[in-house]
Amino acid sequence: MPKLEQFELKINTGAGGRADTPTYSINGFPVDFESCEGGTGSGESFRAIGMPQSFPHALLLIGPETGSWDIESVEATYECAGSDSYTVYLGAVTLDEETSLNIWHEPPVPAFDV
Amino acid sequence: MPTWFKKVFGSGAAKPVSPEPDVENVIPVEHPPSLEQPALGEPAPAEAQESEPGVRRVVHAPQIMPEEEQSSWSESIRIKARIDPDRTACTFLVDRPVLEKYSAWFPEPGQGTGASPLAEALFAVDGVGSVLIHDLTVRVTKEYTSPRSWEDLAHGIGAAIREHLIAGNPVVADSFLEGMPEEMTIGQRLQTCIDLEINPGIAAHSGVISLERVVGNTAYITMGGGCQGCAASTVTLRQGIHGAFRSAVPQVGAIYDETDHTAGTNPYFKEMPPEMMEDAVQSSD
Image (tube, rainbow over all chains, first blue to last red):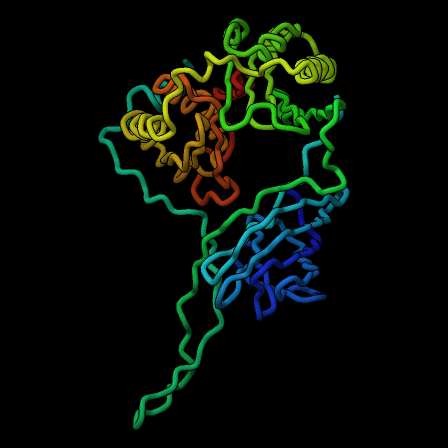
């Protein structure tokens, strides 16, 4: 498991948005994003940067305090110590007050065309 | 069957134990404290009451390919090879579905004869040990004695897959699907295997296996207790669970472990025992 220095999320919201500002948790500890842009209302795009500088046994995007949040897509870019940055693309998912989204993905195994 | 495996599965536990409840990975997240208003006439509390920490269920979103990388349906089939870190197997990612709904597992050359024209074509490539076909992937192991490197073998396998798909040849024969049990039947048989054979065997290591779901003939499991995060979990999966499942239901195809092993709090083995190292290298599917 590499040390995660920084990660960036670009989240597109679908039909149902959330009113509160998203936060994340690393290894069970809730943390505010270092910076946020955009919004999480219906049809909006949200960009946030987190700087955990730690080894992510668990990295979660916490759902809204109330109601539900329809996420259309997530583009997550990770910067880990000693390696090139990489990006993971996630599809649609709905979060609510009882759920969090796993946003930790190991660096991809190298692949080659055959 | 390796010695350590007999110790885990052969003798079984002294008494069967009930599997732990199927608890999804949860990470407790503390919520901010809330203020309680004192009842009329009651003194105000000395400090704010803290609410109980909330526990949220962890959900997973599907990984998708970015739009600019999606191939249009054309005769030029794009295939990427991804070699496992332990180099026991190689997964070929095809840019279009190879086998939908079901998965087809052929543990050795000859097994695919008559059942899967694609598997037959792959076994014709010198060095191919086993073949697993599911959705957009073809997963191949090498024959243990093959001197060929994966870099050398992968191009031949990729070419065979591409040639087969371009020709429009069937991936599996009709006979493969004939007699395939219903999903529910497969699930029931696998659950019985877990309850009567697997879980009693690994209970000695405080381990527990849960069958999450069956899709077609593909099984998805999670490993809990001492198995979660255990250094030997892969060997237990490949040599124990795979074998037990396929004995109980020969039509089972792919078997996927969805456990978050990084969240294991009490793994039985923190490091792979030396006696299991060779088994881990030899077995792979």
